[in-house]
Image (tube, rainbow, N blue to C red):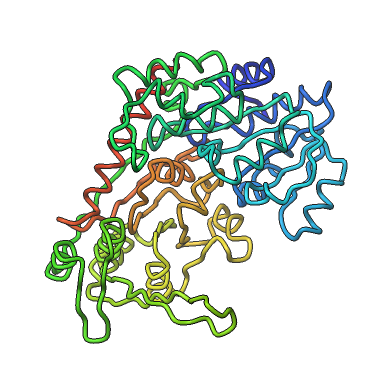
Length: 440
C-alpha cells in the first residue's frame, strides 16, 4: 500500500511532534497516516495505546494495520474484562480499546497514546475526561485525530486541545472562556464567542495542528449530491403539541414538560409518530422506576416516500439512517431484508455488495467505519442535531475508495422541525469552515 502525497506530508508532521493533532476530512486516511507515523515511531519507542469509538476499535485499526504497518503487532482490548485484560497484557506494540473502557483501564504503561475521533474528549469536566487525564499523566507522546474539530462551536476546541497539550489553550477552561467568550447567560453557563475569537484560537494551536487542505483531498473523491425529499403530513397534532405542549389521544396524553422535551417530540412527529412516555415502579429495585415508551402513530408519510425513493433507485444498495428505535422498528416491519450493524459480519457483507438495506444510527456508524465499497446511496429518515455525526455518517460512503457519485437523501417533512434542524446544521458548518480556513 502506498500513501498519497498529502498523506506522506501528514505522517511526517505527526512523527515530528510529541503533541499533535491531525484535522482532516472524513475518509482522508487519518488511520493510514497515523499507522505510517506510528510504524516509524515504534522503532525507537516501545508501544502505543489507541482510544477509539467501539466499532472503530473492533473493526478498523487491526484491519488497517495489516495494510499499512503489517510489521506491528496489534491487540484489540474490547469485550469482557477478562478479554480486555488479556489484550493489555499481551505485549503487543499497539493496543486498541474504546472510550467506554477508560474508567476501568489498568495502569497505563505506554510511550504513546492516540485519540481517534478526538471530539469524544471535548468535555473537560466529564468523568471520562478526568479519569483519562490522570491515567495518561506520564505519557509524553499524544496524537489526536478528528475530522470535525469545531462541529458544535468554538467551545468544543478547549477540551480536545487540553488532553493533547494543556499549554495550547491553558490549564483552565474558565480562563479560556473569559478570554475568548462573552457570558450571555451566566446562570446556565451559556457563552458566545467574542468577535475574532475563532481566528485567534486557531492561530494559537496552529503549530501543533496539521490541516489537510480540502482542495488536496476533495478532487480525489467522486461528487457528493445531497437531495431533499420533501414530505407532507397532517399538521393538526403537530401544531397543537408545538403550541400547547400537550396532546390528547384516546389511549394516552402526551405531555412535554419543557421546550427541550417538546423539540424531541416534534422531531418524532415529523416522522409520523410520538412516544407516550410513562414510568412504573421497579418491583426488584425498591424506590426506583422503569421508564416505558409506547409509540403512537398518526402518519406514515416519510416511509411511503421512502418506498417510492427505493423503487426509483431500482432497489440499489442503500444505507438508511434513523434516530429513534421506533423508526428502526418501522423499517424492519416494511423491509424483511433489512440488516443492522449488530447482525453477523454486517460490515463485511455490506462491502461485498451482499446487503441491499443497511440501517445505522449515527452514534454507531458516525466514526471510522469503511462502508464505501458496498454502495453509494444513503437516506436520512431523520437528522441528528450534531454536524459532526451528520458529516461523519455521510463520510462512511463518501471517502477514499468510493468509485461512484454518492447520493445522500434527506427525508424532510415540510413546515416542521426537520427544516430547522437542517438550518442548524448549516450554521454549524459555517463555524467549521472558518476554523479550517484559520488553520491553513
